[in-house]
Length: 339
Image (cartoon, rainbow, N blue to C red; front, side):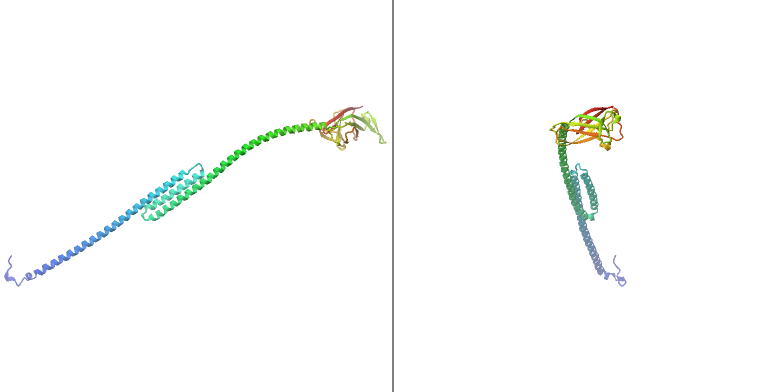
């Protein structure tokens, strides 16, 4: 539409229109600049964020790689250690008990490290504990080897002692057999010696003979007279002769044990008058004797006498036996009768 020329005084707009266009343009430029700046800032922020995220991703990847590496290292060390410990088992109960204890401690240590590896912030601590695990395994292996060596020494000692005991047992058995043989030989020698001694003793017995026994009555004068009645005597006079030269018997004192047996079979004996008991060397029996006669034997033929005069003793009528012993053997015997 064509403006009305008559109304120019009432509308001033046509004269200002170029300035308004410039302002709009400038505003648009300013807005565009702000937008550009904002876009640049966003781009810069996104770029920085991307870079940071990439760095974080790199760090996370690195951490994951190291965690996996540590896990693999841990698993390898643990199972190698368990395998080596198992290979050291034997028949010794103490050794096997130690290995079981060490395996349990290693399992506890492994579980502890596994927990540290789960926490990404504890990798350094986990790495340190893995190092400690290595040292722990070496210590355990050293302990097991030391115990094995000790057990081997004990086994060697036991084997040596067993061999020594076997040798000792063999030696002892040999010595027992030898000892038994020696004892047997000794017994034979003792028997032979006893037999020889018995023969020598028998040979050394001084035999006696011509044994005579007289009943006697003592007179007030002190002299004795012979009587045959038992009721009229108060003592017995016993005389005997010794044998002549006996080359087995050495000269010196000899004892003759006189035994008088009354008609009742009783040995006349009074301890206060020298009676006692001897051992019969022929049979080992105990023999009661009446009196002892000591002589000094000189290999000459001599006659010896002894009186048996017990007080307050009544002699029995009948036949009496008399035995004379020397060195425990019967050297002679005889009989006599009282009426």
